[in-house]
Length: 71
Image (cartoon, rainbow, N blue to C red; front, side, top):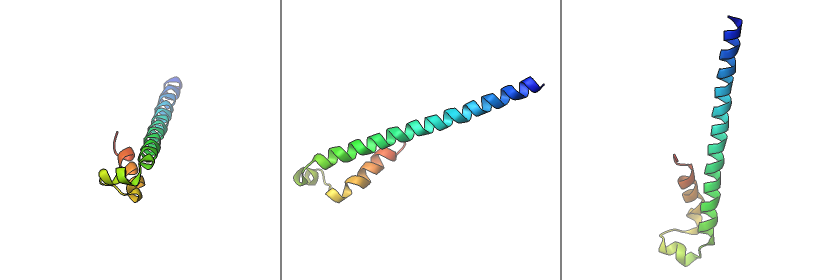
C-alpha cells in the first residue's frame, strides 16, 4: 500500500510541474508577441500609423490586447 501512495504523489507533483512549465512557456510566448508588436508598430512613422487609424500613444495598449488574448 505504501508503494502505491508514493507513486500517486509523484504523479500528482509531475502534473503540477508540467502545468507550471506550460504556464511559463505560454507567458514567454505572449511577452515575445507583445514585444514584437510594439517594435513593429514603433518602427512606423506617424503618417503610416495614421493610415492605419492609430496614434503612437495607442501602440502599447494595442500590442497588449493582441498578445495577451487567448492564443
